[in-house]
Image 1 (cartoon, rainbow, N blue to C red):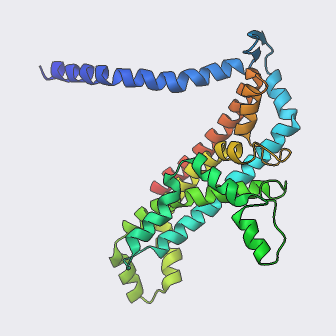
Image 2 (image 1 turned 30 degrees about the horizontal axis):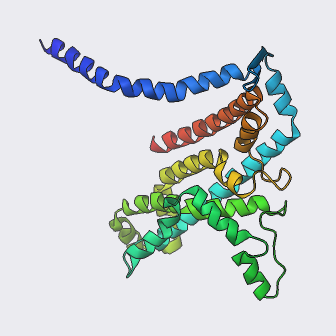
Image 3 (image 1 turned 90 degrees about the vertical axis):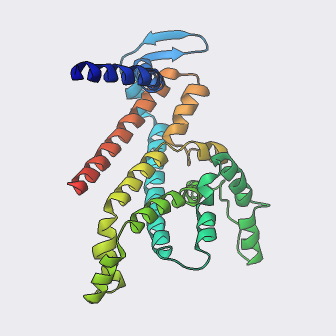
Length: 292
């Protein structure tokens, strides 16, 4: 009788979750499988011409200097943005640890950027970066300094986009670190202080080791998110000037929706998928190792 009830409950919950599982599979597994298949074809969806060419797309993309530049730009973007956001998030969490007057309204102001749409943020920053009427260059001219081509200088455009990403997503790192800090009993710090440990000793021997899981989590999530950066590049520079801000995601977009070559776009997407998967596995192993 008990076995019958258990089977009935299992069947009941399976039927309830089945529609959601089907939707998730349709939105995740099907696109991935379709992308893998298209990567081995030369396919133009405007003319609906499809020809099997094997691994030629992968070989061609691997030798493409534009793709190589996009890969290097993506790695640079992900590295600088992630490290900066994590370090600033830790710094803000330490600054907001404990109670002080005006803490709540200041915290709301700090986390505000991550609640705003990326396109809205880019529209605001594009005006701030404008060479002639932008606020930043106005300040530089007021100080008697030469204005900077924030988005039109090949040497500065990518850094300018990185700054926008840091401004928007540092609050995310801050919230995760703040939650981790709040979970540490104050008695730990009090006992350490009684033993004569100073602030920096507490920071490096107690606080940061305890926050290691949160730090690894934020690093993983921000690395994956920055590695697939697209919106800011599209809104601010569209890959220019030249190819100085071209990223893998924007390269995939151009191949698929500007040149209408879904085969090359799919192969490029698989390159990105493999890299992101390796990054995720590396960090997940690190998190599991810390827990063990």
